[in-house]
Amino acid sequence: MYITIIKPNIPKILEEILINLQKIGAKPILVGGCVRDSLLKIPCKDYDIEIFGIDSVELIEKSLKKFGNVKLVGKSFGVLTLKVDDYDFDFALARTEKKIGLGHGDFEVITNASLTYKQAALRRDFTINSIGYDFFKEEFLDPFNGMYDLENKTLRHISDDTFIEDPLRVYRAIQFASRFKFKINNKTKELCRKMVLNDDLKYLARERIYEEFKKLFLKSEKPSLGFELLKELGVLKYFPELQALINCEQDKEYHPEGDVWIHTLMTLDEMAKIIKDENIKDEYRILYLFYAELCHDLGKPFCTQEINGRITSHKHESLGLEPTKSFLARLTNEKKFVDIILPLVKNHLAPFQLYLAESSLKAVKRLSLKVNIEDLCLVCLADCLGRDIKDKEKCPKATKWLLNQAKELSIENTALKPLVLGRDLIELGMKPSKEFKNILDFAVDLQIDNNLDKEEIILNIKDKYL
Image (cartoon, rainbow, N blue to C red; front, side, top):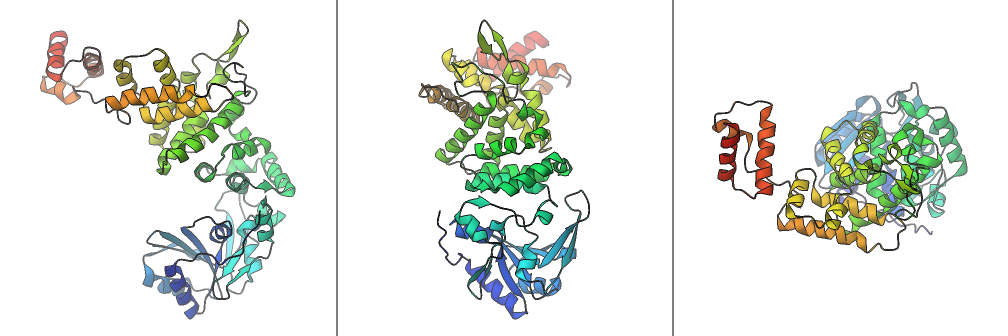
């Protein structure tokens, strides 16, 4: 790989901001991801600017207010944010950091306007993130040879002492290596393993870990690279649900690729391809599709056994619900997100089951009440493609069949709408009770199985319950 040294693509509005900052005596330097990504020719909307030569947050804030609404993120360590159009700008005073506790916020931050760029960059994690750009001099600042590492596709830490101060850097190493397909420097790997062995990662907040997984999923062409590193560096000890997939056998006819871990990683890469092919842009949807794929076979370690010389895993779909809940609880407490993923896990075999059984539209209607059919078809397709079988052409047949059936009924991404609701029962003079659920289930059965309209269903309810 050869890095072409070109001037970063700086938005016109940022150029104006930098000129204004210079007028008040500040020396602004572009730092971090925006510089790294410009060298890798990756489009950028987020810009980090480190400010030298001035220590007044108030003066900087006054200068920035000309361009939009400025938010003060941390007064004690001088961080300001500004959003203009589609761009997000972060401005921070030059500073040093020192670990003083176990929590992610337990750092002593000391701002110092007279720091050199190299002194300030020492607190950064990897050399590729320590490259700065001086807009006014039109030159790159590279005190730790980050450009050399970019060229050689290597992820290397800056300082042993500062690197181990934040155990989140183990996850950051994993997601960067996965996103850019970089190799982690051997010494950096050793430090990561040491932090895992020392159990330093257990103090990390799940929200911070989730953010690193998020970047891995959203920005990796092959997410499997990141998960292989999770395994290699020993991080799976924090996720026993995933670790249990390793060496969990599968039937060779259906899974010649190997154990459940290997299959799961293959499905993640297939999901990445599908998301790209389908041009899915909704980040929230992309994330729950990936997590559904990651969790779809978590039930197999609980039921895999050999029967008459064949490896089976009956009921692994429903048995996967509890480990999915416990795994996701290590990353998020967002109930809505988890509630979307669980039915995708529980029903991931349904498209093939319905297709092979040549099921009626009634079965498709019932499935829509349980899960988003369009999403389910994507999860099922990645599951089928993520293995070493020869007849992969069968994979899209089942999912296309189900999707077409659902589209015929206009329920591909919405549940069948029940004709009779709770308010209809109240209008009949019924008082809300536990029996309401049974009555409404009865109504849905009549709607689906007998194809009755609302008036006919209500007549049946009156006959049976009144």
